[in-house]
Amino acid sequence: MFLKEADVNKTVEKAERERREALQKDKQIETLKKEKAELMQKKHKLDHQVQRHTVYRDIMEQMVAMTKFKDAELLADNLESQLHLREQLCQREREAEETRMTRHRKSLLRNRNMGIKPVQDAVHVSCLTKEATTVHMQY
Image (tube, rainbow, N blue to C red; front, side, top):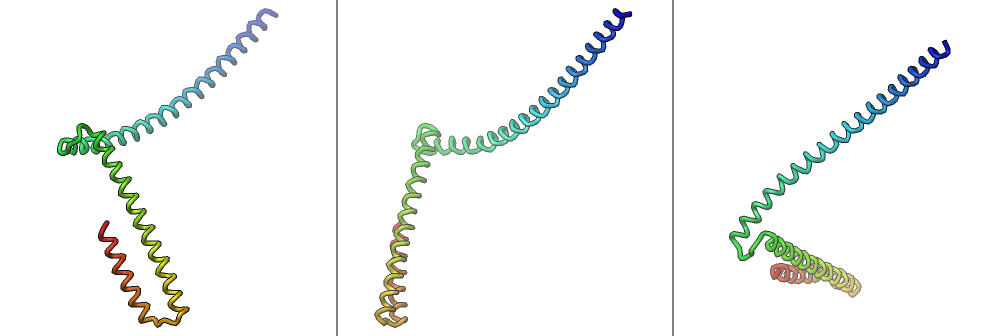
């Protein structure tokens, strides 16, 4: 009888261990399914990005055929440097405009302190506006 109980206990323990292992494997399967779904979604997004960027590559290759550049990378580098230069020029223009406006404000304050009438201020503003327009047209 004692041997039968020992066999039964071993069988119960084995069944319990197998049940725990099965539950653990089920959890692993669910985790892997979630990971797979996330990876598939990420892959889909990346495929979409590649598809969108392919259009730009095709355009760049067409532009290379129409320019002196040997490949799209050289053309892209050139365009990037031109954009950088343009940004620098725009920044200089903004700074010059800020300087002009600061000078204008100071001038208006001086004129008010000196008792110059608003009509004269309007003439001064008109002159500054013409000057700013001329400088802006040069860029």
